[in-house]
Length: 152
Image 1 (cartoon, rainbow, N blue to C red):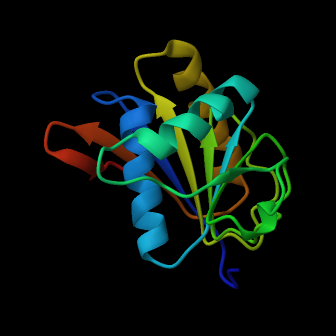
Image 2 (cartoon, rainbow, N blue to C red):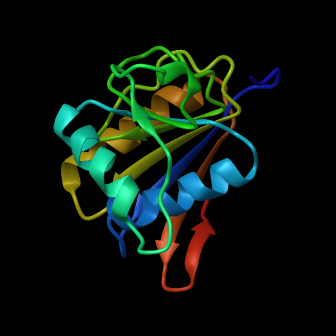
Image 3 (cartoon, rainbow, N blue to C red):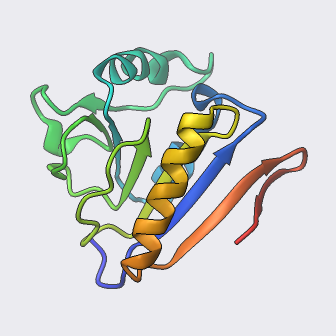
């Protein structure tokens, strides 16, 4: 868990889907020996990701579990709709406009949103304003042809 303020990074997806972007970001998180918490407001999204993270690549998978399953506290990647952090994750990924809640103890918060969806864009803008006003360090990453570029 972190002693410094949580960094909040907004990822504006325009060229790839969540199914393409999330596994890569989770792999990078785990490569740092961090645990990840993936939070969505939509149980159906989590059910989909539960299957997808096992099969997204022919030569690899991401070990993970759902928060309501046994051993949730031991999962390297935990999928949840809840606001708690039972696995002691270092990074929380917010999907589908999920609320950040209290970010104390997290090293990083990643807000992923589809820039082609006006409602998702409006939600992300509102989240940016709230988080920025809280005093946490925020940055904005936009998906470009060459990859992710920091815009702010």
